[in-house]
Length: 148
Image (cartoon, rainbow, N blue to C red; front, side):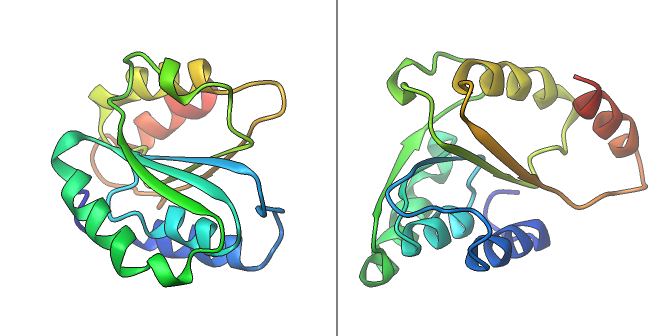
């Protein structure tokens, strides 16, 4: 799932490009980064970005960071973050948390919500972009996510 640039990532990256959110010199954390496309866009706009995903996606993230290094005007690094686990190394809370198509698997919903609760501070802005799906369990998962 993490090796594809999903439509939601393209939409969120394009939204960031509009300048609607001031990113220069801001601390940004991308959850479930996959290829890192959204975080890379934020870093090209001057943000200090940490893209996060599971261990098995770190090699791809590092490759994409290296391939886009010349475009980065902020900073950009990749770190392992498994939702629901300790987030101490990502403190203090970032200015922005970015998520693209992270609301997908039912079993990841509770760990994702715990991670968001643990990472956010009173001034953290969470930008969540996802493709609304009408098949399978996704409508129920989305409803649960937005209730919380």
